[in-house]
Length: 213
Image (cartoon, rainbow, N blue to C red; front, side):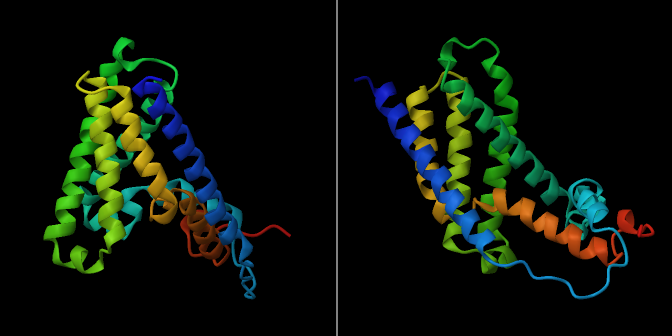
């Protein structure tokens, strides 16, 4: 059995392990009963949810992003790199990337994501406030994702093989259930709760409409 086939088997197992682990964490979250707001609604919770996932995501609508635009941009580039890596991983399961025409189209996004990841890691070490807030998992998760972006970049540049790329992805997937990375799922819950809570209270601009009886 070739190294590529072995690495593929390990990758598929690790992907399954990550999906099951993430499903368990989401199931535990859903097992907690929802807290009902006893106050009478003043506006629309539904429009609050819509605002939370649309206009509420714009940088000038979020104080932290508005005050720190470069940090916001770094986060955007990092997550674009992650999305590109996910697409690249899916493609690599079916196509030998060294024979894929247009594979270099992935490199700018992976490269920018890689730079953003390295910059974020440096900030974790050098910024006193970030260093005080950081825990070992913050560093481990950031390092693993950054290494995956690096391996993705090297494979599209024909520096390394799919087996190397899949190896880094496998390590990330095996660590994923124990890490902070599942915030990718929690994000949707938190934004929904935010929209419902502040939407029905009439705090959000988009929800400040008269309720229909």
